[in-house]
Image 1 (tube, rainbow, N blue to C red):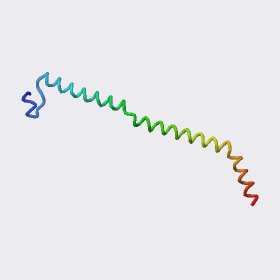
Image 2: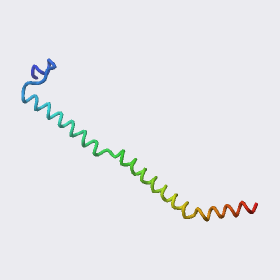
Image 3: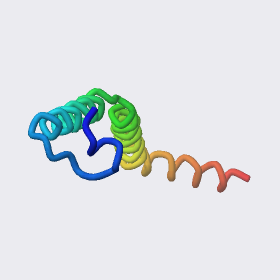
Image 4: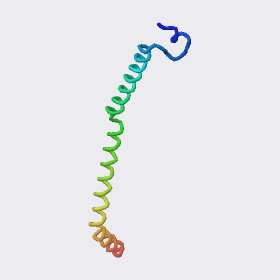
Amino acid sequence: MGESEHSGEHPNNKEEVGKSMSKLQNWAAKKVIALKTREEGQGLAEYGMILALIAVVCIGAVRILGGDINSTFSSMSGAF
């Protein structure tokens, strides 16, 4: 261990600087890999796509069947 590690100063030795940079690069690389492999956001996006598909199907069904349903309810209400 060099004197710079005990005194809290920046390392002066090129070898010590290289080790520090290597540790920093390894840490950064691990963080980037961890971010790329997380799948939490992927699951949320899939649920959002499923919800959007269900909404489109429901809107389409109401548009197609809306007139028939309206006339059926109108005839039922006129019967009473």
